[in-house]
Length: 126
Image (cartoon, rainbow, N blue to C red; front, side, top):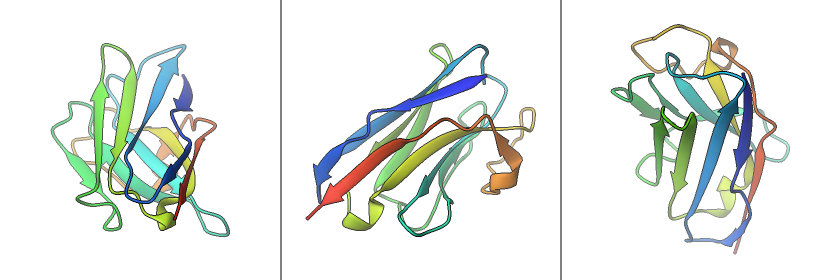
């Protein structure tokens, strides 16, 4: 499965943006999905995750209450709605597939994820 992230761009602080991640060459219907980001000079970090059936969702503390993850299994697409963006949200955002089959809970462990997309750049200006 190949993942293609899109929808990034340059926005002002306080704005909203929705990024998407579409799968091709297969599906992730039975897998949890995760969004991660890598800010300049920092390690890749977990942002949000959603279980295969959307019943479990988890967010990093830094984005809780501002970001919302969702998925459409019919479209093989996962979304990340980002509201009230801050300058510190500037990063390359990546999506990835949890390699576990129908894992009931979301994991934030990067090592559990694979099929990383190429990322989409989100830049938040003041």
